[in-house]
Image (cartoon, rainbow, N blue to C red; front, top):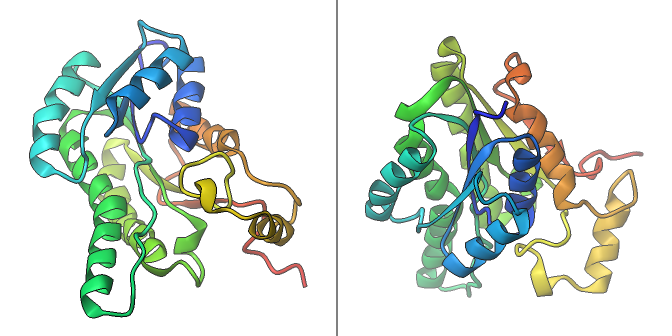
Length: 247
């Protein structure tokens, strides 16, 4: 596995950083993508594998920036990609009831959570190995009610994932989605999480604890491996059973 390569978008913090750590531990060479160079450099230092971690600052919502950056990343990884973890995303901006505000919030949310993944995959797909693993980080918000534009933007990835799985499966490439529930220590929740809201989310789980970035990373780690090649077109919830009604 020491020769396998991976790209992790949103790799500087939270789930993305935990995923990168898991892949580095499995001897992958990993490219971390994100918008903030300083955050990426700090993440690379934390991973402490200078010969197997590269960073590239890029706005994945900008097609021209993606077009310019991807050849650099591909070259630095040796020309072939084995794993792409599309983790980049953003919380929806606040909106009032005016159509202008609603329109702006929806466009921003779809761009930040759907288009970023689409552009990343389309820019890299010609360089995928025949055992490549495409893994999208979605959300439990895409599976049930209450997610608003964020849930809708993540749900859009589900339909596209099925298309990619059908198209790429015959050549050995798999495509799956990991849908986390409440995961602490991530920028998505950040300072907006009150003690009451946290307790409520924990109570909804069957295991009665918060999720950790490592919980998501452990699932991604397995999906990334060559041995997972018979698993494709799946949506895997990492939510502590929160979407199950225990009656």
